Amino acid sequence: MISRKIKGFTLVEVMVAIFLSTIVLTAIYGVWIRVQREIAKSHARQTLQSELRTASNYLQKDLKSIKEGTFETPGGLSADGTSLHIVFDRFKDTEETKIAQDSIEKVEYRLSDGLLTRKSTTELKILSVNVESMQITKSVDAANLGAGDLESTDEDFKAGREAKLEINIVGRKNIAGSKEEMYHVERTSLVMRDEYYKKTNKNFVSNFDLAKLEQDAVVVTDSTQDASFGPGGAMTEEQLQSLDKDQLEGLEETQNELIDQAKDSIDQMNDSITDTDTGESGWSKFWQGVNVFSTTEGEKVRDLRGDLENADTQSDVKVVLEKLNTYTKDKEEEFLGKSVPGYSTMSDAQKDLYKEAYEMKLQDRTIEGSHQALVAQAEKDGTTPPEAPQKVIDVAIGAAEGEGSKTYEDEAGNTVQISNEASSTRSTTELKSAYDAIDLGWMGEFNKEPDDVGIYNAAKQLISQGKAKLNVIEMRDTSEDNVELIQKVKATK
Image 1: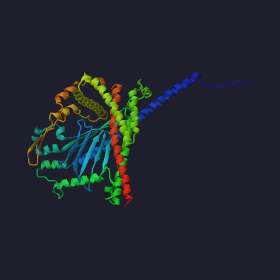
Image 2: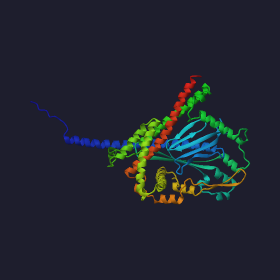
Image 3: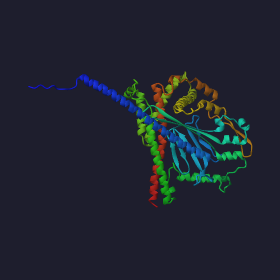
Image 4: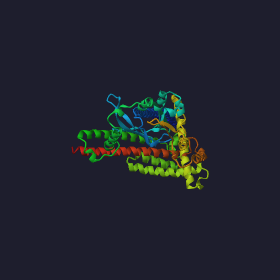
């Protein structure tokens, strides 16, 4: 009988093999993760830089061509630069890409909840969905030069300072697959030509004013046409019946371009919503080496984040926003109790005062956190770090006390002084006192807060993202309805 020795692996050998394989695979996985992170970071940087540069180029081109005296801020500019609404008339471009001073068009920029749009009489364009803040200031203000300083200089220098604008656009984008955020600042400056020439030469009259056309008549005609057939507005069958087939096809093409823009923007927004840090699940945190398990609040906000990402109709987004608003309002009352001594026993009027001051203090905390991140980013990139922004409370008090009063000269040569009026009925002393009494120290460092504060901040960010997404969905739906109506009218031609 022949005996055969069966060869195999012992349990110890198998365990050693598994152990060694785990080490190798872990090392490979670590390298792969780092490579993916660098790719995601590079993609976020390129996207952000491209968006902000495009926005900066549009602003520079438009504001260079602005007609003097037409700049308006119907929606105002927030102190922290996170919201903006400006409208002005600009001289149109000729076919040779020169500025035609015999005709103008109205241009409108809006920034709200990170969404920056530009609207003219011919198009509505989404410039970016990742704008953190935007500021447009005159070089006079940026250099802290007052009227007295300018009077001591020659007229050309003075006019140049008053006609020159500084534009700062700050962008922020979540880096996919991580908690990191990418920041980028786009800066540019320009001279408003029409205003400069009028300031340097009192007898200067632009070609537009010399033309037979009255400015008001042109503006009214353009705005009427824009209301009827311009981008962003709902059309009616009665309006479209007045157009021929070629005009309808051109209008349809414009609306389809806007639909494509809106869909691309919604995809970007959904990516940002997905990357919003609402606190990871327990297992995910375990893999990151953090022994913290998800909380009930975190799970609730994560569910709402998923609902917001999947929402594709106006009504669905509004439902999620309502739930997020309810959650944040409840948390705000809790946080006010922690931040304001004796808050629970205050009268309703006192609570309103402290709520106003609390919102300002939170904004200042966020602005300071963003500024620190920008400084850190500048150090990494080897660029000049941005200057520290002015606090919201200081801007509010300055406006209320009439600081920043400006002196102008009217057409007759008379000196006119215009000061900012207080927008609040509260005294600056009460507001500043309430602001100083609020203690946010318990929240810890910005972006390193306790779980409940971090989850609350995530909910606030989701509200902002939801509002922006709702605006774009409305634009998409309106344009889709317009295309359907245009096709219906085309069939009758």
